[in-house]
Length: 125
Image (cartoon, rainbow, N blue to C red):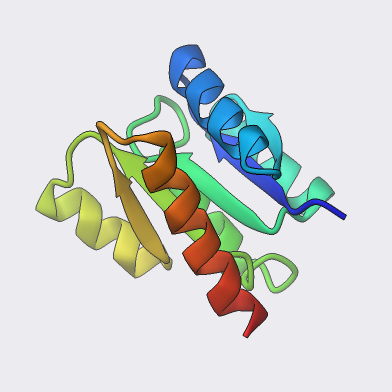
């Protein structure tokens, strides 16, 4: 069975790029358009890993991470944050919420797949 990656972003182009890269690498890519959708889909689908943008309106990526990591049913799911800027305050908030790692924009498909594999291998071990 293919591992499922939930991709959280409010930008359709970023969503397409990430989905394409992950599908080409053999993963199932499940889109979540914004933070509220991400929290619902994480509970419903129990992905193997979540990739979330940090800067989103309404429900931020930090809030998504916090919700996932505070729920006993989902806290084991690794969460990677994708961001064009790692501002100290945002990074600190993401780390405090339980973020497992970062993917910096701009990124290549190879960067994303390598980071995903790294975190899924750690989880499997």
